[in-house]
Length: 147
Image (cartoon, rainbow, N blue to C red):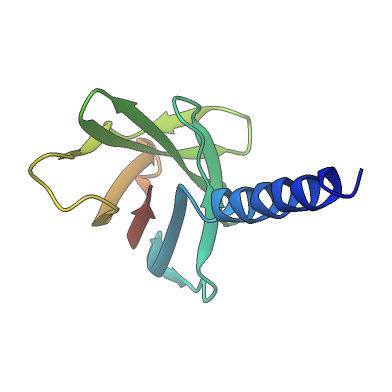
């Protein structure tokens, strides 16, 4: 009994430290927002951080104006020796209709690239109403740390 107790304690400590390390994996951080909706500037001061799961799209709310809310959808894919970060933004109108932008992909090869972080800048302008020429322009920097 005395020999089993330290072994169980050691296994528990290893499990706790291993699970703590997994919390900091696959973190997406968005910051430095520049948002303009119909000529009005919207301020988002706080950076947004979320954890992504492999092959599961994550919908992230960014801001809301009187007529439209702006969201980003990120998906993390890992296959073989490649890591892909797919992003797509959309404006959601008050009636529930979504106006999407094009999908954009960032890819790193683990053998060649420096693995660990995908950084970039997203700039999208979405025309959500052709009649009133209502549009929203959003620009932000993102950083995705994996492994």
